[in-house]
Length: 459
Ligand code: BGP
Image 1 (cartoon, rainbow, N blue to C red):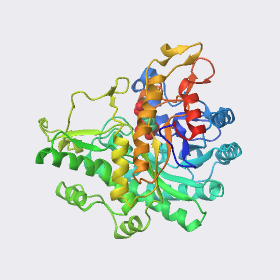
Image 2 (spheres, protein in one colour):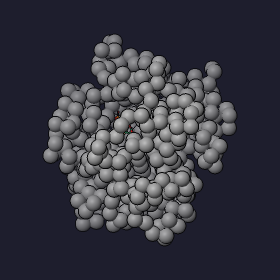
Image 3 (spheres, rainbow, N blue to C red):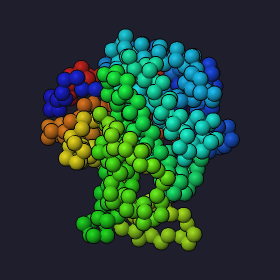
Image 4 (spheres, rainbow, N blue to C red):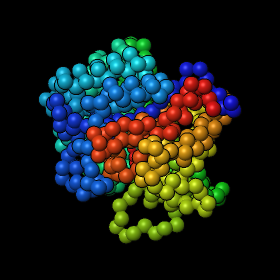
């Protein structure tokens, strides 16, 4: 064996409430932005498949958790649906409490540790209607939701995460048209980003008060920024991309402060959000215990060359251009670059610049369209996924050997799930879902390969 991992390494996978639960309007669940958006614009979703048609974990969680155990997983990250747990009148939905208790207890009975995330892009519609993350009141409502989750489940759950990919609601919802409310407005986006980070610190504060003996962190998608060249202009462009898209979230979570350079930039561009000194103190005093890092692709950057159209709104991309590096490896289905060494580079960055905090790869994965064509005797032979995972793990292993505090690896995702605008176009799971046959679960070849890897704790 060439690549050995430490004892107690966290092996497993991740998913999120909206993407896997189903039962979108059952047992007291209220609407979130995805349910609403699908209702008003179903044509935006690939093949018109919305969040109403997910893998039905709500009804099949026992079968799924047993399968996780059979496949050797020791941990699984999922999220609690805010709009399922807390009703518009702010009371707790007891049906939801029952469901999440059942899930957590079943996981513990099967030796699969629950890692719970509190926000995975799923703002309740009753809160979006009062401004969503733009409204400071929603930050307080999130703080109450987080506290309630700790009180209800924290006796058994010892790994908590405040947010998944805090940049995404900002970038896709307020700097693009990929998440509701589809606004392009840099100033509003900065306010949203600031409030999300504040909400994270407030949740950490609540967690610490309860002294439940677990750990709390955040999950950030790090896209290491690589400049086209070492020219001053390219380096500057790459630095600004890193500052806005990575460090806004990473520095704040781990070091308790927004980078000075970022504050300067925001002031210069007249983008300063509304904030208070008290809130900045909360951010300073409530940093994370651990970090989840989602890694899919790097960001190749060059100095701005393209012209900004007259009247076009200001966005982060007003300050840099993407560099289409010749010869780069691409996943043709998702269009994302595959650059395995990125996992090593970001690990070294965390070791050297972020207190060598302990972290794990909380998402990494390969979305593939049309996987049925790889079926042999009823099983998808996804050798490309095995190669993808093992090539990333080789670099993760090197990072470990060089002193990085890496604690685990979770694949996105356990079973094929519904994904935002792409619905089921690209499949990521260890386990195939048959949409035409009551969401029947069938493990792919990679699931058995991964099982063996976990059994040997290496490959
Ligand atoms: C991450 C999200 C996941 C998941 C994944 C794959 O950014 O945390 O929710 O969707 O990306 O992306 P996609 O499904 O868009 O291909």
